[in-house]
Length: 258
Ligand SMILES: C[S@@+](CC[C@H](N)C(=O)[O-])C[C@H]1O[C@@H](n2cnc3c(N)ncnc32)[C@H](O)[C@@H]1O
Image (cartoon, rainbow, N blue to C red; front, side, top):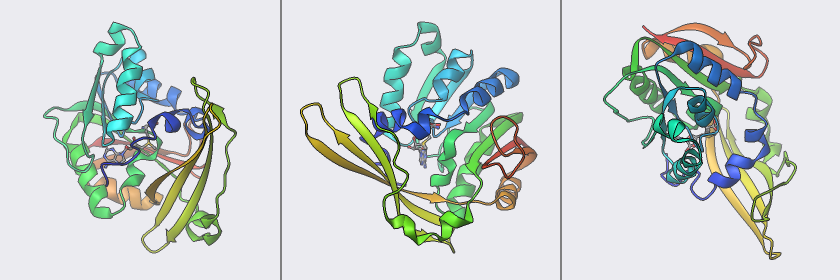
């Protein structure tokens, strides 16, 4: 995984529709409340879910590989009260190899961070790190999407698709997001994606920025096997953040350290 991941894109990522419109924040804040104890958010990004969890009273450590995402998150945390600030710790690390030297009652991976790991070796390395940071009886929530076979086999997505309504940043920049999947590898279950930000600056200048990343599609039973191999017991699997059944689009595994 490149260190440059999401670097230069944090602000655009944070305000784009797919992030702003997600209905997962209540799910994660409730989880923090009901679990209690220290929380580790793996792939915390800009703090989209981390900050609401801290505001709900949780002591949260956010871990991410991207310096840009973390510095956006730090600035946002700094705008919160001293009380909230004191409950947040941010760490720059790779989820496949980290050692924080302590354990957490709840570990989460909101919004598919785990799917950026392209190989089974990387997935198992991350799960092994997560397992060794789980307190006895602690909860681990793996949040991925339910693979859509059509996307994994659709070569037409090499053209730009999915244009989102534009959003305007405080300094007047207007940003429009589209997507492109230049390459799909159904055997490896990997989609090479591009997130394209078209930026219109207030002086009329236009910019086209492209964030490249890979997403590994992991099926339900494959994920259950991975979790089992890594020392977790799956307590339940949800298809959405409001308790929907599997088949509703998301795959949310609530697991506990065995
Ligand atoms: C889709 S964003 C999700 C961010 C945040 N959890 C949210 O819900 O908005 C994925 C995040 O995972 C991080 N990430 C990707 N690979 C990583 C790795 N190997 N180790 C740590 N973080 C990683 C990225 O930098 C990015 O911030």
